Length: 66
Image: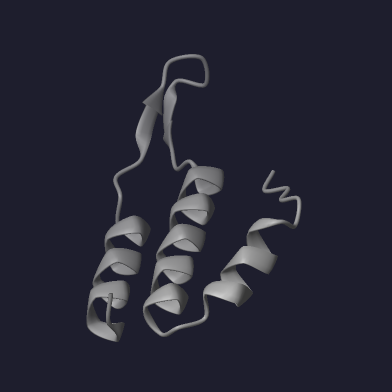
C-alpha cells in the first residue's frame, strides 16, 4: 500500500453513508466501525513501509472505541 492508496481508502471510510437506525428513526454514522477500518488502513500502510514490529506492538494493545 502506498500513500495515495491509503488516503483514498481513508477518504472512502470518511464518506461512507450513514445507515438508517429504525430504533432511533434517523440515519447514524457508525463511528466505531470507521475508526476500526481507519486503524487497519494505517496498519497496512505501516507494514508496507517496513514497520511490521510497530504494528505488532500496536495490535497487542487493548482498544476501546466507544
